[in-house]
Amino acid sequence: MRRELPVGDRTLGYLDSAASMPAPSNVALFLHAFPLNADMWKPQVDAAPPAWRFLALDLRGFGRADPGARQAAELTTGAGPNAPEAAPSIDDFADDALAFLDHLGVRKAVVVGLSMGGYAAFALLRRAPGRLAGLVLADTRAEADREEELAGRAQMLTLVDERGVSAVADQMIPRLLGDRTRANHPDIERWVRQMIESTSSRGVRDAIVRMAGRPDSTSLLEGISCPALVVVGDEDGLTPPDLARRMHQRIPGSHLVTLPGAAHLSNVEQPGRFNEAILAFLADRLEA
Ligand code: MLT
Image (tube, rainbow, N blue to C red; front, side, top):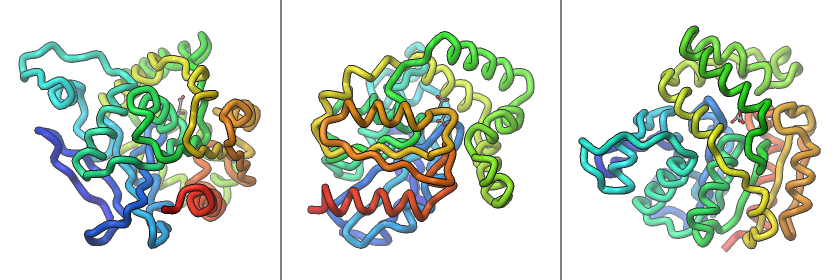
């Protein structure tokens, strides 16, 4: 179910599989892709096994998360309302996730990040590695943006400024969803479009700046000490299977699952196969 949590003077929106308290002690935190929101994790949150609480957080600027860096700066630094607004940073996502877990009294969680959610997971890993009970990196990359990607980000900033969020949806949907998904599941395409179009231009803009400025995380890979799973759609053109394989090879003891029939949004395109991979990982490696 969808819930809201007041944290300081902000409201964090999230999906929660736990219908009532006390919640199970095993927690997984799902971090979404750009430019969607926590709702993209509905097929996973609805499939949470009884021993697990699945939480999916709206990252800053998306879903019900208040847009703007000001409130977050106040939240994390205690700065007053007249403090200068901080530049958007990928660390904002990690700070929000940590504040969220703190407010729910969750000490450790398995973090599942897809694409931009994976960039947020790396930021969490840098900030507070001890809070990760496990890590799932889905359709994402550890590398920072290269020149060509930065040029694409600049183009998208112009697009959102000049033509708005629905033009961003037009450009993103063929990258997020495979041809077969779009041909056979117009319902999925409509749902993804609706999530994108519910985002403000400001939210999209700030996220582009956050992604463009994120540091390279490849040097973290060898040091990941929690159980880790790498998942990738076999038709993913944004973060292709080769990248996933290289990431898996560098993370000690990690597993790699390649999902047939999925492109970039593998959890949405192949929810059954994605859930199977996640649930097997949780059961085999992590169940308390
Ligand atoms: C995403 O799916 O989150 C984005 O495509 C990631 C990116 O643009 O790097």
